[in-house]
Amino acid sequence: MRPSRCDLLRWQFDLAWALFDHHLQKLAPEDFRWEPAPLCWTIRATTGGTWVPDWADVEPDPVPIPTIGWVSWHIGWWWSVTIDHAQGRSPRERTEITWPGDGAVAIGWLRDLRAEWLAVLDHLTDADLDATAPFPWPEGSGYTVAHMLAWVNSELMKNAAEIGQLRLLRAASSA
Image 1 (spheres, rainbow, N blue to C red):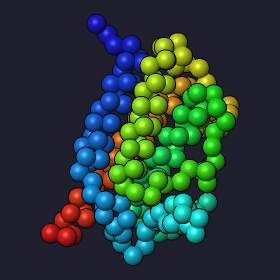
Image 2 (image 1 turned 135 degrees about the vertical axis):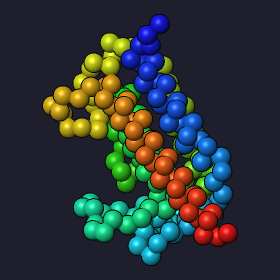
Image 3 (image 1 turned 90 degrees about the horizontal axis):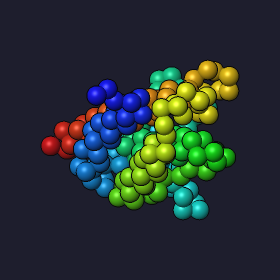
């Protein structure tokens, strides 16, 4: 039997998540703020006790290497905003999405976002996939909800690879 488009996109998401979760299970608290190079982006505590990412509205050249903490915030940011759009809520601004401040809590946050995303996926039908995507493209782009789901899968896979590579580099550098 041929899988539906929803089933195929869900399968792809589950694959990306399994590869990501492999690295999440192996992360140590000190991995999150390890700086792999002198020029890097990380998350920083504010005087108010929240954690915010380094950011530039125009990507610098050279591009700073992100820390695992920064990449985990980045996932939380794009995924939270995507879920807001998918559920018809007003999307939060980037500055409203802060890092939890602790690696274990960040992992829990990402797993909670996965559960929220699965709830979105569980309510979709193949007919829903043809609707105009509310995010991440500008209105009138012609991209569909199917494109949005494929983008989430691709973005998650990319970020999983980044975190995995940083984790492996840190382990190798301390050996």
